[in-house]
Amino acid sequence: KQEVTQIPAALSVPEGENLVLNCSFTDSAIYNLQWFRQDPGKGLTSLLLIQSSQREQTSGRLNASLDKSSGRSTLYIAASQPGDSATYLCAVRGSSNTGKLIFGQGTTLQVKP
Amino acid sequence: NAGVTQTPKFQVLKTGQSMTLQCAQDMNHNSMYWYRQDPGMGLRLIYYSASEGTTDKGEVPNGYNVSRLNKREFSLRLESAAPSQTSVYFCASSDEGGHSASNQPQHFGDGTRLSIL
Image (cartoon, rainbow over all chains, first blue to last red; front, side, top):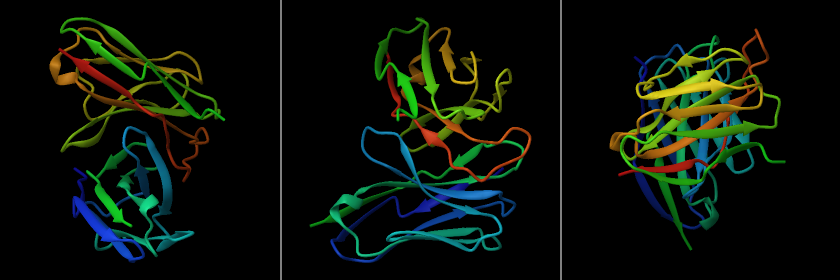
């Protein structure tokens, strides 16, 4: 059974710092991995999706990497801003047959001005 | 540009009452999903619908039923609510492209916050 873990559960950094969020998964046979952002009281917003054949994806100040063999993904946020404060969730899709996702519990990020 | 719309946003029920959570998407997506989010448990899939006319169980289906009314709408029903079903419920959709798998992200609604007393 696939399990997804995100460490740390919470992180507080000063504005301007570069930071890395971690996601690990137990079964390396994945179809893709997605990173989401969730603001308090809101739904999830997709940030980046990495296909199983890819090593990384970039969008603006965000860069996500994927190492299937070791069961790990990282989300790198450059030059963090207070507006980046949110909970970040990673989710893996195990199969091409269904779109079912298995989620980690998230990392809550606070960026202090 | 509504995306995924969930109603209601908040609801309080008494144990044993029934209720239907509504979800509609305007992106012409084939696949739709219902998740629940609980502290310390993350998001867990309740049911999903790969295409109009089909539904399948997810990780935590007990106590719930679903209906894929048409391509746009996917409802979740609690027949006899229990306190353990107090949670935030999210609906999502994705463009799975029919028979071929896709690498498109899932789009989420803003959730329904449900309390059962």
